[in-house]
Length: 267
Image (cartoon, rainbow, N blue to C red):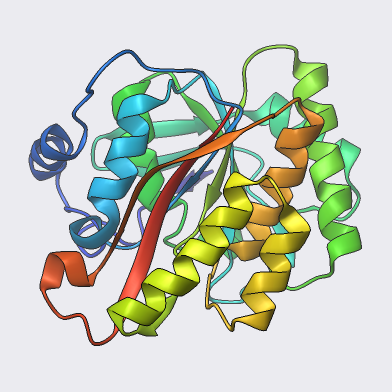
């Protein structure tokens, strides 16, 4: 079971040579890397959010196993769709699915469904894979797409993720893929994004939901972030740090309707 690239040549370069050159520019370690329990990383085209994602991947160790959560933008397939077997192909190589870890997660949470079709067109996790492979060529992934639901279900998924990681007994990075506010002017987006990022840094998942709802923040990966926050705290997380923040306007020069991108490490 091989998932072919859906957005190579669109969200990131379409061939290995161009990808490697882009990664050389985006991934520039500035000092010793640190271990993290979880991260929040953006998923727009590398032209816009790649620098923010690259700063995070340049500062955080990537272990051999990563559980990746992202929003299901297309609404295809199961509400909570797990890609449980096979490989994810990229122009720079394949990332294997961590099949035993995926099977354990399915066994620990009846809400999840093995659903490969849901992932076929989705970009939010695919754009992470070449960066993960660059930082750890041995990385294996457990991709999970999150659709509609309610907090009680999200907390059940968090508990299952935490239990699965504890049972595995080796380092597993939790990754939430999310952009921030969409298509407001720069000043408005900066204000809204700061509210959302402050809640994430405070490790306060309920506050995150509240500000997103009250302030009408169009943070597409708010639920994956919520789930990862809860699971990380159950695994002992005590603090978080924003490693980078910028908007599409900082790249394009058009500040009239921007998308926000933030990178957060959770320790």
